[in-house]
Image 1 (cartoon, rainbow, N blue to C red):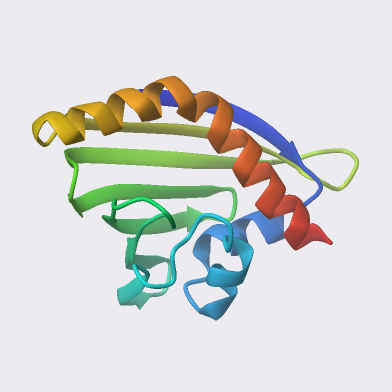
Image 2: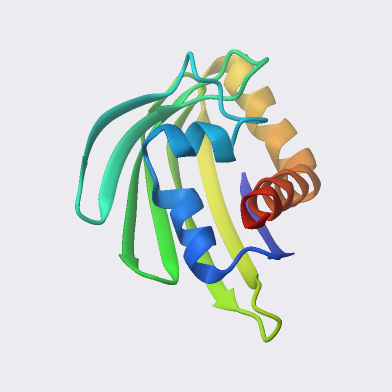
Length: 146
């Protein structure tokens, strides 16, 4: 399953970067409509990276991701473990807009669905993700922008 999408947000590039790299309680606030606090765990983190267990509320899915932010305009992740797929990675590019907001380009790829459930999850994400992810992410980033 490969998904590519872009979105525009009122959030500044600095706010977008913070939304994806803050691993404290603020992350739970920003992503409150999608991130399940019961599944969220910070396994380890350091300067420019973090290993997080995350999952969405209302669904029995979780992923263990290593996030890295090698530059202020880029965040990447690598799937370390999951309950539904074997491999995955993604990248977020943050581009300043003239109006003070940001354009965010996203590419993600997950594969190796584990069993029928995993294959269905990946198929569903592939079909609904290009519409749902930008909508949900834009709403979270715009809320952060105030």
